[in-house]
Length: 366
Image (cartoon, rainbow, N blue to C red):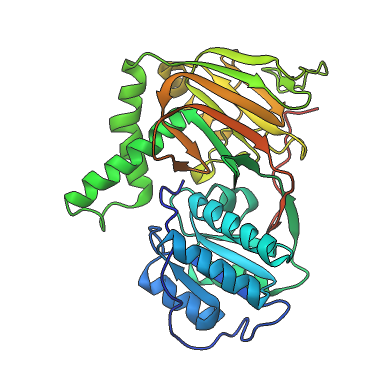
């Protein structure tokens, strides 16, 4: 999960491309979030060499993200790759879509490079690791007109498109990850401790102790869209629909979130039924205790854990009401202020995403 979505800067200067040397119907634009941990000066130079300095945009502020979106749409790139985490994907896709609507042009194909902290989408679709070989592979794939693509449904939350959103332990981990990173940087250990270790420290030293000691907040989740369907603990969809206005969950909340992709960062399958239907997203609510989650951690991370404490639904619009303001995240990006309400809708249209390999089948569904 990427905590920063600030994009800005200028395209680097470097050798010409050997993959997309000129603007054309299959030219590839690469947008990099220079705040992402793996977007180093070396990686920027490497991508400029591979894709051409005129087609690589290095960003560091929201304003320049919008400026780059304008340039990319005006040039007519066929494919755009986003280098960063899931927060980078959310920011760039939304800026690109806004600019495409303004210029009355179609949204180009999009893809990701695994240069962020969690890279949920990258893990989900099978993007190569960001080695030189991996980057060459992804750039070559993006430059091919016949490369495999699929439509990826997204959520719409606060007017933004995102692959997942919600509140609970996931949001708390994001909040704690940011605090842990600040503390590590203040100690001068930023170059020594990588994102994975920071994530582990945040969970172990801050999130889990807080989770075990604090009273869980009360939450109410209401279906405000079309028919919703419950998914049983055996993974089967209940054919009896739940109409608009149905309270899907009411009670203490460890996690209340929605997603159109099964993975969070590092390939953790928090929403194993998220891709069961393209016209619905998965809602998951749980009051599982810290002891339950930790004692079954391997199956929880794989998405195979079954328990009455997990309440899963397929929906197209829900409202989440909390008893008091809490941290909430949209696309892995923790929101600036705590909130007691969130509405989540399925977006009107999907994005066309480069898909290196087909997603794992939702084998738990009939």
